[in-house]
Image 1 (cartoon, rainbow, N blue to C red):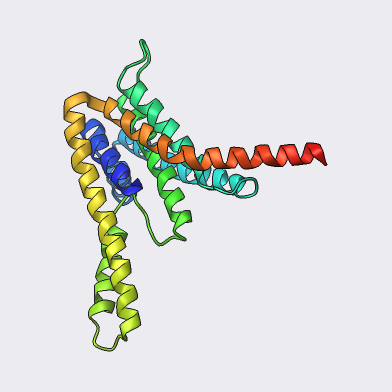
Image 2: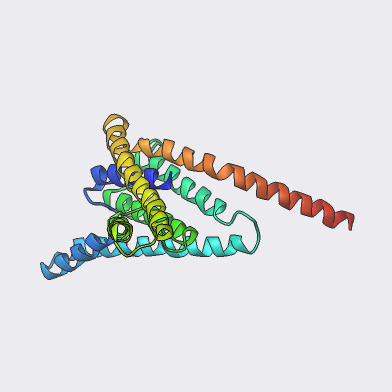
Length: 227
């Protein structure tokens, strides 16, 4: 689901700011090109985009570490915060609120912040095996997995494990692509407001574990009062 949402946000974001805000390799290359060509305004904007991506990742890591010591579902709060960020982005960039809007540069920075947040969350959740905001690493892993699966020296158990991992990785790449199609099509119809349904979907995903944590905390409070 996160891969589908990331694909949708990335594709629609490209139609807004004309760059892929999850592609930090391209961002760093753009920064080098801008500096070499003396385009200081573009270089500063690109540098801020990179900093926003890093800031999003750092804040997400701090959020997960804070939740890990206090609740059972350590990623639910991070998911909810990402949903709120995406909801605010859709409302502000879509100029739903009167007199409040984002500039093109601010839109790119906001997208980079959200991409960094989501990438850090899924990286920590999967122990650095999966990243949903870009597929370069996933395609590399798929190539390595194919080599393990097709290798003549592999035993049956190794082949089975490689096949299962390949299925998960292929599903993530496929959902990222489908999300990109859905995001681009929806953006053409309604504009940046298309990110609002994505935010509502993230909120729906976070509500159940957050409710479970709240009930557990409420039970603990009652037991503490009785004792």
